Image (tube, rainbow, N blue to C red; front, side):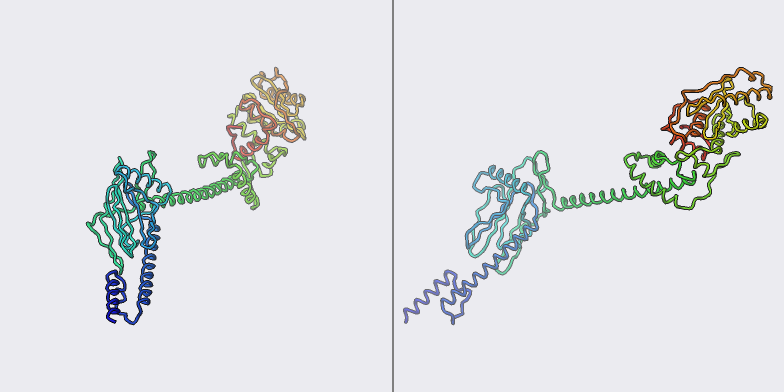
Length: 508
């Protein structure tokens, strides 16, 4: 009995010396096996709690991804008591066993590799939540050997300076130690110094050197660049929309004004729209013709559908209605009102050195003779003019007879090549009678007749009147007859505008 009690005392003393059973002393009603089992469960539960805290801290550290200076290298080693295994972060670098220079070079190489992998896990002052009993050391290239205490997990954070010919302005001088007991984590700072903002390492320099970029600054730059791009895109889109609206509005205004001035879109040419837009915006819109002409077509359709106001052109004793002007559209035959008013504009443009006789003159001369047209030149001295223009209407055809008063030469111009010299003789007979009546004996004889065979010719049956007006214009302004059938559509539109503007344009 005494021996049994002695053995029990020795066992308790041995267990107390080894640290066993200390947490459940005083529970005497349990057996030794039950006490050991309860103690193991308690240790297992504590180990699991510490492991969960460790995992949570590592995950949080990865999410935060705090920065370090470009001249430092970071290595984290985690030792576990149970499996004695080491968990090394992706930034394992400096070799503790090598020389100082070799350790610095290896540290730099490892750091560059980790940067190229675009994943940098960084430790900062918030590592108090990472593990229990963490020590932070600041040294050169050597790493002190870490001892593993029982029933605890230790993380060694090594910050070692890297030898670099370029000294960066941001350096890390950690003087921080974190001590924790089993009840919780308590942080103690030794020799507080200026805290360094987390930084991001980047290799942007063409020489391959490491440059440190503050993470907040880099993030701000990224945000600013994205914002600027979005603003640029939105502004360009808004500017495009605005330019299209402004362009469309200007086209509509131009067409409305055009319709008010000319009463129709008969004289409208594509070049008119492009010329107006170029003058208005100082930009060449040749590359956007399709869009512009599509909008012009829409606007024209909308304007034409409106009620047509009464439109007329009045110039001196001439009056033109929209029906008269419509004879200039397409391949219509010109009427006398258009011929006579345009002749008036020709005389004004030639400063009355040219006289344009009325289109009814020849018909009246043929039906009533000289007495029927005697009063037509009562206030006009024909022989003081340089050139006489006489449009001849032959039922279904127009031609032109000219009289060069200085050269005393009468010439016939016919766009169909008809040498109707009889018509020219009628004008010659009239001029000789007029010279005798006005006592201009120098012009009573000596006249010559001719037919211009080189004058431009028409290729259809409808444009003879336009040819006569263009003959008259060129001869009065002393311009060569350099036009052809393909120019007639543009000439029709130009004549329409000149009649509405009551003056001849510089370029025909």
